[in-house]
Length: 288
Image (cartoon, rainbow, N blue to C red; front, side):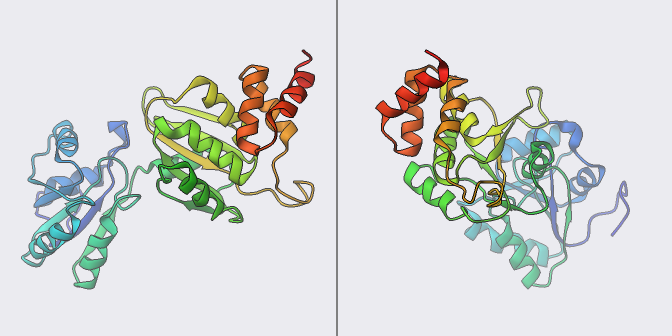
């Protein structure tokens, strides 16, 4: 393969290229070089990638490749590689294959004996892990949770005993309900909400799941792109022999962000305990 900056055409193959998740300054020289020298670029949304190419003074043919047309497009892209062309694969933002369907194209290109390589770069999940202040020695990337509460709770329950930090993407609109389901099923673990990473309004909010759920229940859904990181379950000696939620702590966390009545209703929804009893206890904690 020619060196970066060469004017020669890339050799036939599939080039998986990571692109910025927000800040255009995160485009690597190697990624830019691959896109300039590829014959065509397969992307999720041609409109999004066209803006990226314009910003980098690159003009190349774009073809859509996403979950809805993947089965039809893969043979066409593989045929172009077989004919000697260099195909670059990008996602709308970040590293391709991380929560998108690109792995099937990579697998079939590998199986066909084509040259496959990648230009590594930005990835929202990895950046969130870097900023969350939670254990990173073991982590599980989970993609996107289900939209419905019942399915989402089952999704969390399946990982209840996974001793690793959990990392996933979530719609900002569904974040408050998602955090309630996480607190209900996983207990009151430490977590971080990483929002608008690399962008102007980048924010990392850390706390327990109960505290974060209470905050967003009161403040409402945030804006922008969101990555959630949830720490692993505590060891039994740290949790007093178990990992069940502490109702007292949940009430204390909720009372930081909402009224006594709202806090009691919120904790009742998470724990299933009687709202009346929780209201009485909330009054005692708040000193009212």
